Length: 257
Ligand SMILES: Nc1ncnc2c1ncn2[C@@H]1O[C@H](COP(=O)(O)OP(=O)(O)OP(=O)(O)O)[C@@H](O)[C@H]1O
Image 1 (tube, rainbow, N blue to C red):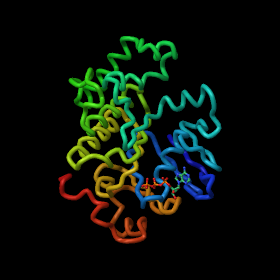
Image 2: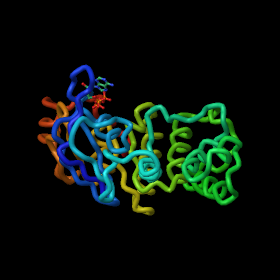
Image 3: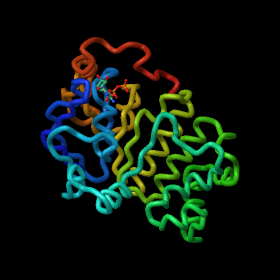
Image 4: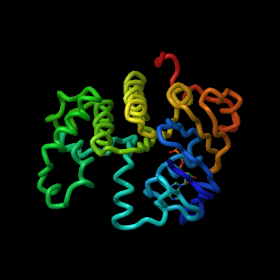
């Protein structure tokens, strides 16, 4: 369970990224965060694993405050949280398998990871993860040789190898074409369903949010302006979140049918 209590973030330049956010996200939910550019979606997501430090309030994960955690306890909390980025964040010159194994770094000592001495059980776990996202045959390929969609699958496999209980995905399909977008979303949904992994995802396309998530959180100027089941997110709701009608480029459209 992820709990945000009275969370605000003010950046050093005075910009309010988040204002007084109160949310509880339960284990196994698939939550989409939507809103205009600059609404605070990335700030919210990155606060959860403390890539962004909040200015006030508290964030708890399974009743333990990540806001006040440090050292080993922060590392252990972060080990349970996988992160997926728009830009994939892979080491391009390394093999696919090596990238997936980096999900095991927090489970091993530094000496082993520097010299690539991962235990066989970690290698097996990584190969299994690649199999689940259907790119096992690419295990020994250099990551730079993969398509964008394949690279995103590698980053999903990395969170599987990490045995993350929560996946935070920041616009994971923003640089992908519509067909690949759907494959990546299907992978995330499968992991959510089969492993009961909580998924919190920032999405630009509102129709994708409606199709895949169980709950939609709408942000506007750093505040939650909608929080409810995806099926309740009507056109009027999106109009409220965006302060205007949706534009064509906020809908992925028929390609996902
Ligand atoms: N490092 C930073 N320093 C100063 N202001 C920032 C910083 N990061 C974000 N902001 C500001 O905080 C607000 C929220 O930004 P955030 O990136 O969370 O929005 P977003 O909804 O994810 O937008 P986008 O969809 O464009 O990624 C914006 O006004 C942004 O300019």
